[in-house]
Image (cartoon, rainbow, N blue to C red; front, side, top):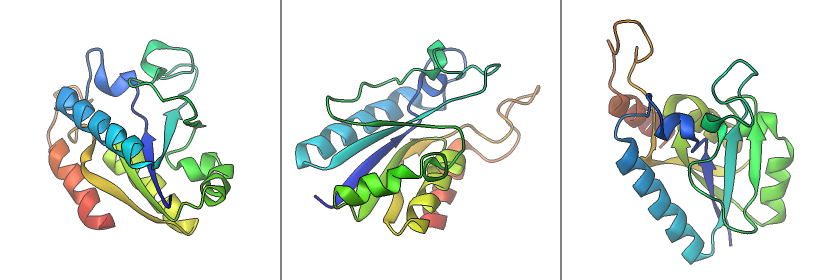
Amino acid sequence: MTRALLVVDVQNWGFAGDWPVPDSAALLQRIDAEIQRSRAAGDLVAWVQNDGGDDEMDAPGEFFWELTLTPADGETVWRKTTQDVFESQPALADFFRQHNITEIDLIGLQSEMCVRSSTLGARAAGFTAKPMPGLHGTYPEGFFEPDGPKGMSAARISAGVDDELA
């Protein structure tokens, strides 16, 4: 096994409640299918869970903090407090090396934030890493502003991350 799938921030904040990412149901189905495919191929699957601050909706223990999909027995969950899980969890790189991982594919949320930053963190740690097109998502630019989205669409933001990190 040389490949790992890193499932980044697939938490209720992005897939449930009043503010799911665009196309969340279809994205979640695609993410789940890739997890199942990776498991069947014998790839290592590892999970990342963001710990928001005490006053944030993804604070540990809150509903929106919970993972939306369930890790299988033996799959590790790495909690983070920064966009780059390799920064939050320096032991993650050694964990992958101990499992002879050389390449890491990243899926999950948010494309331009934690997926992008963790891809760059994996590369800085010496791994071949890339986000998987169509398997990460985000919000459109301006989504949380009072008048709603005003800029780039979520799909365009995600595609831009794919182009940058291809």
